[in-house]
Image (cartoon, rainbow, N blue to C red):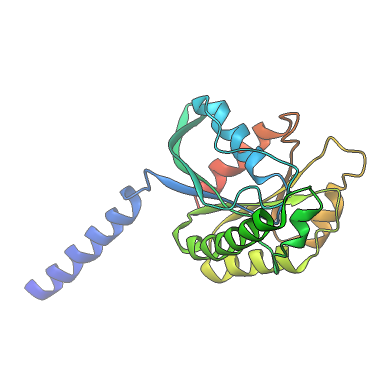
Amino acid sequence: MVKKRGIKFSFIKLFFNRIFRRKKLFKLGIYGPPNAGKTSIANNISMAWIGEEVGVVSNIPHETREIQIKERVIMERNGKKLEINLIDTPGISTKVDFEEFLKYKIKPKEAKKRAMEATRGVIDAIKWLDEMDIVLTVMDSTKDPYTQVNITILGNLEVRNIPTIIVANKTDLKRSRIKRVESAFPQYRVVGVSAKKGLGFDELYKAIFEASKKA
């Protein structure tokens, strides 16, 4: 009888732990290929809630070559709060070629340095996936979304069972095709935004709050 009570007590304790042990701090990672607009999106989110930018935005690929974090960003929606560590990651690429930087009038020595830093950044970004609770997978909605990089990112997230929202950026451009992104990845929620003009973020915040329930 004592044994049965012990088992029953353990079950009840586990049950209540699962109900009330809600995450108080979520790690929200922003992933995607170079120049998709990850840092611009991170800046929009951070500016909206704490009035600070996360990083520098540039047309030069791999401008973000290190993990950038804004800690304890508190988001609010419909009277509810969500506390996150906002993590902007270097652009994921299958290959980083220093010649890519030369096109932007960067000197060879600096270009090679940037290429090495960008390569390390890609490795670090992949390693950090294991730390994430929710991921925003950013894609350029003016381009074909069905790329090796996008498939690799989503595949890694699926293996780790990390909730993800596909953010189709650059909706302000005429070449933007959100339907193309939705058709390529119908199993995921897709939210269209324009980081440049600050459009679509209310819908993105709604999606983040919903994803936090699954994390």
